[in-house]
Image (cartoon, rainbow, N blue to C red; front, side, top):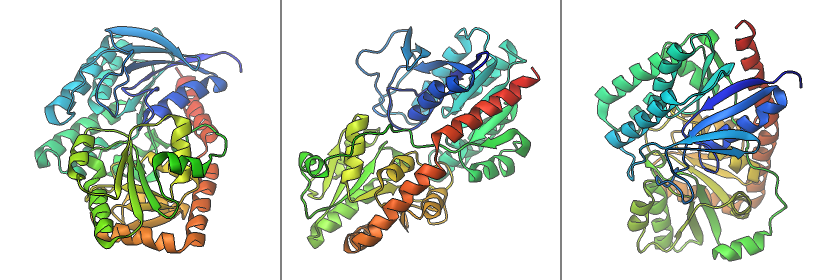
Length: 411
């Protein structure tokens, strides 16, 4: 392996969180050691997507070791409802902790965004504290597009966020993005030089598990053998627009169709969604699951669903897609047909796309897949093949290590 270099990874989400960005940050931190980079992590106490610090965690600053990686956890403001000013204060508070936490003398700094304002503060502080240390920002979501596409805060806020995001990414020595279309946005809209951007795809972070007992898993969740189960997993927030799924389940009730819609996970909108679904028979909520139960549940569903709010198009590549493809089940993407999520499903030839906010079309797509089991199986197999080729973890980590080697070679 040779001499070990040190990289400090700084981001607000990290295992044991299982949703969103955390699994990728955790996997990269552990795997980089095999490529000559010993990582150290500074992160928050686990709180996502529940938006409350989990039992057993807390305190101003704590240390632990996860998969051989030393992890420093710092406290920050965690709002019960992470919207508007509360979300901003949450990110700023974590950013200030990043700026004041001693990092030793790493050879490289890797900031994970979101959270944007935390990253902005961290990068600015690092320019002063460690001017010669390469500062890399790993962009998982494009924040300013998220504000525009979800309609939160209006044009003024979107313009402000664009300026902050542009300044932060241009201040970094290098930027990693998870999709080619992200690179285009950074160059064309945020003014980041193309030569300072590298595309490294996210991968399937789930570990291999024994083949699940599908019948037992379905029975455990109360799913009938003749029901078509359409399952959405992950965060339940504004971007997901999950009222559309409740409306599809309500239409299935009205038509008496044996289609059950299942929402697995947690998030800021979960309680509101449960209230909105009162009286709807063909909707089910399941809390967050551990990795083994999660994989068994995905593999036991008939169809896996990505649902996005109308207007969401380019802001993010849903992390759930890598897990969906890994499960080998067909995917329905209820989203902008011209957006990045639809393009990903089409590239994998792993499912069908219907417009966002059209519950009748979502239900019809589920019924068509039910009526064509061979076609559904073929789509699932295509997704699994895509996972083993394009979404390969070893290639991604090798690319990350090579980038760090290149950036530090002249320092």
